[in-house]
Image (cartoon, rainbow, N blue to C red; front, side):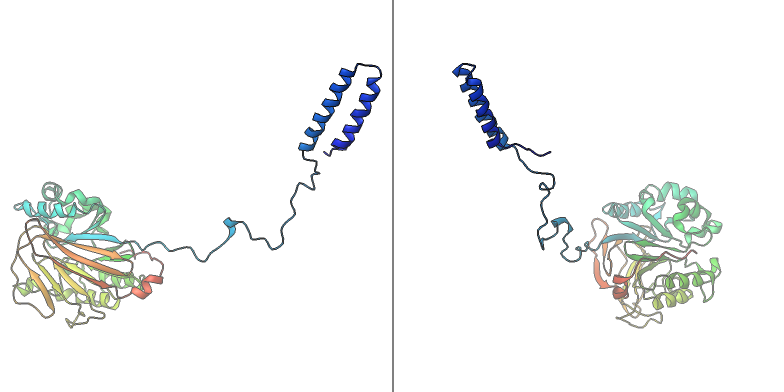
Length: 366
């Protein structure tokens, strides 16, 4: 709505009114009306006298867009996530529960870490009672974040039935026991190295076919594998220490550029330099094998060092801790309280360049 009368028109209008009224009224009334006119004229001056069209400000040529619409290059990337994986093999012996209790205290120090158990998680036969009474009170406290592998002692009961009943779907398909999962940006492969029990580990065996398919579905991944039996070990009795039957599985892992392999079976610690499945030193593409059968069951002395064996110990319980970044890793052996033996190292994953740019893939079904 517009104002058709400004303060000056109103002023003259009221003044004339006062002159006419002054002829028939007192001078006091005239002065009152005159004062009122002046005040009312200033009130009108204070009120904005603009039309609706004029109230809309004209756009300024070449004006910058509002700040919220401005862009200043790509959004900053989030800091790469680092996650932890801890574990060991050969863990809870009901006749020597103190060892498992000592290593369980180490695992407790890393409440957010994923946990691996590299076989023979409970002794002597892997019965339901042993899981309940010996594994449960120690490493069983971490059951919900643990992914186990089958050892030979789990087959003390046919089909390792109590093992599969205890772990449920965390142990892979019943009767197979091999599977894979993800920890952070890393692909983790769990093998059943009891080859005779599951139809062999040769090329074309069910597990080998599955492994090859699983790795093919993760061509750009950084890879860790673990299982109970090692391809290489300096154990005193070679029939117990060295398991050539798993070599076809190692061939597939090597072809898939796996970085680390954790094993147990020998109740000791031994780390090998990166090597190929033939046992030849290969710093660029080799797999670093670490036997970490130090979960608490017992100690076993090692024999003469095999080729490429870099460090060994057989009197210390402890766990392996691995820090996994998207394209690199750091590992450390952490000893039980009161012991001083330690080992540590780091590396860049073989598939680092590809892993940095690749989307995640789903694991193959066993």
